[in-house]
Every structure is written in structure tokens, then in C-alpha cells.
Image (cartoon, rainbow over all chains, first blue to last red; front, side, top):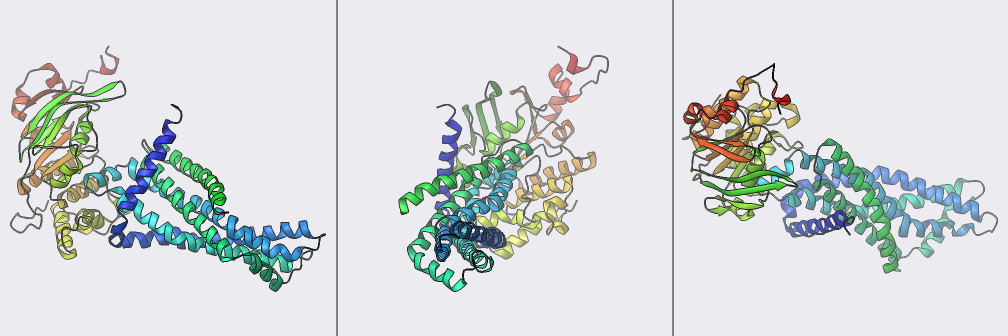
Length: 250
Length: 264
């Protein structure tokens, strides 16, 4: 039980942080500049990375399925398999992991250094809650940008699959057939399931990274430890949540 | 250093407050840092808490500003509990941190404007005037658009003082304001603290191990040794006191043949 104390403390402080950030949500119009800045950092700057990686994932997925199906004559299903995999699973999960690596680590590093160098203390002494100007704008930004990033990921994954399916000799599947098969299987419910997942993952990642950053004490070495801890915790949390949300949505 | 007269000043002067520390105790693990600390600070006074490094001075300051909670005892600011957030909402308190604690991602102007903007105290133009006024007091108007990384150590200290002034505090705390500064800059900061007190009549508590600063600007000086208040006296009384601990702290003798760190 003693070993679990830091874990329970982290979960508890994360919940409190989330509730306090929600409490300050009505002040979002006053934090509009910070919110836009975070949308730019979290969304716009992550978009190219998400697009390139998702294109590659879709391409490799189509390649693997095409190779496995080459003797069975079922290659027309590549579109549906890539389509469903991207929209339900790979799109949300890979986007969340990329957000963790690119955005989450930066958030933890920034907030941890603010904590270590007493900037957070300075905010407290000015009666400016850190949740209001540091956490809430980031949570609002991820809530807005995560669906955009996920849709981008899904679309680029689909196109990656289509390019490979059409141009690799042992698959040679026409794009029209690929997308017709994809359309037959991917419905609005599947898209919504993926977006719900992505939204929950995004908020969880930003919350974990803010919480770990704001709980950092010590010096520069501890900032590095915090970044590692936040990234590892976020990825584990994404994968755990993925299972439970998938079960709930099936 | 340019000081703007009170008549033309944009910095609003609020009523100074009294501070009372009663039987404060604080431990970290097995180590007791503050041991039954008690003192009173009069409104408008510059009260200096002096002591060697590790005596508990900064911890005491964090308790007064409400960043730490005591194990026992209490601190009252104008009769209100200092550990309550509400007290610091009702009474404007500012602190100049040892390392400045400026917001590194903001410009100097944004650092100063943050408090009045977030608390919606004034319109934009008034905030601009007050910020430029505070920067003028510390002679740093030209640094308004710089970020803290572009400033020297002394400039950061002055910006930190200016940021505290924009809060228009009734109580201003300084944590080692002259540490890491050259003697000229340390003298400048000492003059700044005294002038700020004179022009705004706020209550100041200065934590330092700089004996020259303490004797020059303090109305009264408390000597904190090993977590306990050893003496509270005026600078003159302190200088005349022949207590060996006080004299050893004020005039430490460098003994190369018998160094302190080798004494049992």
C-alpha cells in the first residue's frame, strides 16, 4: 500500500487539477490569446508530423494486408480493413502518442521548469491560479485540435493505403475499388467512436503532462525525470484507456 | 537612479499593514527549520530578518506569503491568517524572489502587466502607464520589450522589484535582494528598497545575510540563528551589542590557522 501512495497522490492531484481547470473554463474568453497560441503549438505544429506518420502507417498496413491476402483473391477488402483500422484504432491511438511525444513532453518540461524556477510560486503570490492560465487554455486547445488532428491522421492513413494498393505490383488494386470498399464498412458510428477516443486520449495526455510538470520539485535533473515520467505515464494511460473505451463503445 | 515623485506617480499607495508571527514552528522530516519564531512588524516599517545561510530565513518568508503551511503557530497580516488565500486576496502582498522568478516566456512588460491584467484592475492604457512608471522607478524603461533571458542578473532583480511594485502592495517581501550582485548594484538595490518604502509607505520585510544592507535600510533587524530568533534590535543597538554570536555574524574573523569547517 505504501508503494502505491505516490500513484494515488498523482491520480488524486490529476483529478483535482482537472476539476480546477474546468472551474476556470468560463474565463476562456479572457485567456483567448493563450488559447490560440496553444492551438497553434498543439494543433498546427503537430499537423505535418501526424500527416506524414499516418500516411506511412496506412501505406504499411495496406502493404501487409495486400501481401497476406495475395493468394486468396480478397484484396478488394484492403480498403475496408485499412479504413476501419485507421478510423477506429490507429488514427486516435497514433495521434495521441504523437501528441504525447511532441506536445506532452514540451508541456511537462515548460511547467516543470516554471515550478523549479519559482515562476509558479510567483503566480500563487499574485493570486493567479496556475490552473487558469497554464492548464485550462491547454486543455481547451487540445479539446479543439485533437479531432482535427485525428481526422487528418485518418485521411492521410487512408490515402497512404490507397497509394500502396494501387502502385504495388502484387496488389494492383484500383483506388476506386479501394475507396468503395472503405465506404461500405466505415460508417458515421465508427468515425464518432474514433473521435470520442481521440478526445479522451488528448485530454488525458495534456492533463497528465500538466500534472507531472506542476508537481516537479528539485532542479534541472528532476525536470528531465518528469518529462520521461509524463511521457511513459501518458502512453500507458492511452493504451489502458483504449481497451476500456473500445469495450464501452462496442 | 531615477525616482518618480509621489505627486506624479501612477503607483497607487495603499495603507501599510502590520505583520505578527506567533510561535511559528516548521519541520521538514527530522529537521526542525523554524523553532518557536515570534516577532511583530509595524505598519510602514522595513524589518530585516538576517541570518546565515540555512538558518530558515527563506522558509519563514514563504510562510508569510502563504506558500508554506506551519506545523504550529500562526502568522497574522493586519490581524488576518496569512495561510488563508483570502487574506492575500484582501491584502495586497508582493514578493521579490531571490532569483527574480520572472516569467521567462513573457517580455518584461508582460511580466509587469500580468497582475493588473489578470485581476482586471485597470483599463489597458492605465496598466501601460503604471507598468512604465514602475519600470521608470527602477530605470529600466528601455527593457520593456526584452525577455528575461536578455537581462543581466542585476536587471532581473530590478524588474522583479518593479513587478512587485505594479501589484501596489501593502506588504512587500524581499528574499535575498542583494545576493549575487556586485557591491555597486547591491547598494543600488538597497537604495531602491529604501526609496520604494519612502515613496509608497508600504511595510517591507527583507530577508538577507548582507549585514551592510541590514544595517543601512532596516528600521529593526531580527537575527535568526539556527531557526530561532536570537535578537531583535535597531541597527545601532545590534552594532553595539557585544553578544559573541552577534559579533561573530556581523564581523566574522577569518582564521586561516583554525578554519571553521574543521572546528568540532
